[in-house]
Image (tube, rainbow, N blue to C red; front, side, top):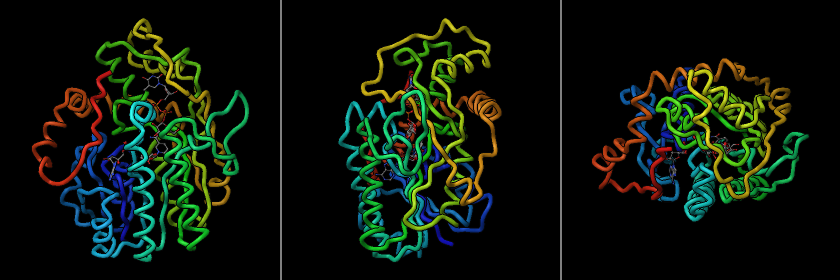
Length: 347
Ligand code: NAD
Ligand code: DAU
C-alpha cells in the first residue's frame, strides 16, 4: 500500500513512520513543512530506505498535496500534521486555525478528488473538554473544547465527519490521550521536566499540580492508529488510551526521584488559562472491536522514556540551544517551507 503520513517529522508522526517501515512493506511518503516542532533528526537513519520518501511541504499548499497524491498513487493517508501545543495556542491561535482546520480541509478535498481509500484523522481527547473527578470520555461524549488548540482539532474532526456524511468519503477519526516517549519536543510536560531535572533547572508546575492526565506510550498510540487504518470502520470515531491517570505533581515527583535529584527544584507557577482539570479515556471500543491493547504499562514506559532522554541528550540539547534551528535555516531557508514563528522551549 502507498501511505501518505503528514507531520511525520514530529513526535508521534516520526514514531509512526518508523513503525510502518519496521513492520510492513508499505511505501511511506512523509509530507512535513518542518515547523519548530518538525525535526529530521527524528528520522535519522531512514534517508536511504527505498520504502520511504520525505517531502518538504505544507498541507495548506493545495498544489503540492495534489501532486503528491497523484504522483505517489497514494491509497491511504494518516494525518498527524498540526500545531499541537496548548500553551502556544493561548499565545497565538491563528496558526492553529490555518494548519489544523484549513490544512485538514484542503487535505480532505484533495484526497476525495484523488479517490484515496482511507483517511485517518489523528485527533485528541481534548476535543471533549474537561472531566470532573469522575467519569471517562467515550466516543459519544459531546465535544466541548476549551483551548484554541482543542477548538481547532474539534473543527477539523467535524470537517472530517461532514466529508463522510456528505460525500461518503472514507474517513476515520482517532482521539487519543496524552502521549509520551522518544522524540517528544521538550516543551511538553514529560520531556521538559526530564531535561530540566538533568540540567538541575526549575521545574514549573502549573497551578497546584493536581490536574490529571491519562498517559499512553507513543508506540502504543501508533499501533492503535495502524489498526484503525487497516481494520477500522469508515465514518467511526475510536478513542485510544491506556488507563494511566496521574496528577501532574505526582508524575513530576516520580521523574525527580527516578533521576535522583531534589524535589526542591519544583516551582508552582501561574496556571494555564482555561486549564482542563482531568482527562480519562474509555478505550473499550477499540479494544473490543479491533482487538487492540497497549503493550506497555506506565512504569515500564516511563523507564524507557527516561532512559531515552538520558542516552539522547544531544537530541534535546540541540533543540534547546537552538542549534537545530540554525541547521534548518541553512538547509531549508530558501526552499519554501515556513516556520510557525514560535520561539524556543528552553524551560
Ligand atoms: P508535533 O508538534 O510533535 O509534530 C507536528 C508535526 O506537524 C511537525 O513535524 C510539524 O513540522 C508538522 N506540521 C505542522 N504544520 C504543518 C503544515 N502546515 N504542513 C505540514 N506539516 C506541518 O505533534 P505531535 O505531538 O506529534 O502530534 C501529532 C498529532 O497527534 C497532532 O495532530 C496532535 O493533535 C495529535 N495528538 C497528539 C497527542 C500528544 O500527546 N502529543 C495526543 C493525541 C493526539
Ligand atoms: O490529551 C492529548 C493532548 O496532550 C494532545 O492533544 C496535545 O497535543 C498534547 O500537547 C497534550 O496536551 P496537554 O496540554 O495535556 O500536554 P502538556 O504536556 O502541555 O501538559 C500536560 C499537563 O502538564 C497539563 O496539565 C499542563 C501541565 N504542565 C505542562 C507544562 C508544559 C505543567 O504543569 N508545567 C509545564 O511546564
